[in-house]
Image (cartoon, rainbow, N blue to C red):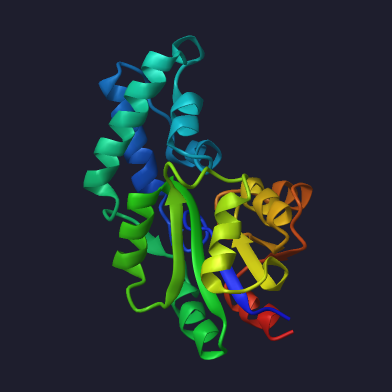
Length: 217
């Protein structure tokens, strides 16, 4: 049924929450603003750095100047700490070994800046044969715009209808639907089942091993 699997990064392949939260809170402190509890960042992240900055700033400080400063501060701090606490989720390394052995073509599509996306994938998954590793830059708009997913399908040389898209947020599910892929919601990530189902998940999985069962039909 499937010839390829396209993965989200944060909350799907990697548990990045602690490092994201610390970089964001440091950027807020630089701007003279209060920070947030780590768990709150489950709902702040996922839609790009600019949107993250808007969400975490106090309501009276969401003008362009503050958003630009906090987004830049986040990028600066994250460049220093992106590997401090981040780890692959349980079962992900095994899944990334299993799928290519079954001739599945793999890709990553993230709303992280493209440079960070490539850096994390190379660091944590250097032996995984990803044919596409895409983040946000001038050529690739953030999800849920389906453009990045469509480019990934071209790189995988697989039609979108033959790609299983695995992600942990409603944004991921919307992206998969818009791109004509099969949306699968990862319950070990940052968001809840209701959001994933509302935004188009066809299947929800509680552990990466369940993805292996799906691709086997």
